[in-house]
Image (cartoon, rainbow, N blue to C red; front, side, top):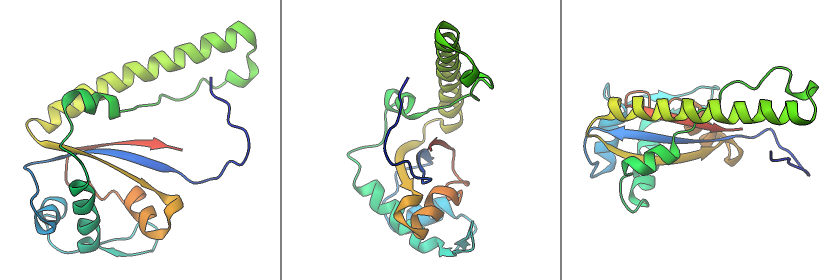
Length: 160
């Protein structure tokens, strides 16, 4: 069990594995795949960001990656956390350890199941990884929480 000491913020980050139907070759390709209905904007919290700006950022992130993810790398990236046992903080000693162990095992099982589902959904697509944090400002809050990959098969792992 990890225990964090020191300053704890309320910020979050999320990583995404996203399946593109083919290898994007430009900002325009990324935009067409992410926003098939044409130019638009994303505004989950009132801060509207044009789809063209989002596509530019995602294209830059793709260009910085060495290669698309392999199936093994996808499995490493997909993380599912099941709900915590409600009474975990009321337990002590071996009972708490057993509850944590079960939580970890259940999360690992859920992650493996979601990986299989994602790979089936993605098929022969080209998969990349992205990571955005709301602690980097309003724009990155939109990238993290704005469901920008909704038109593509994707999985979000939240790191709160």
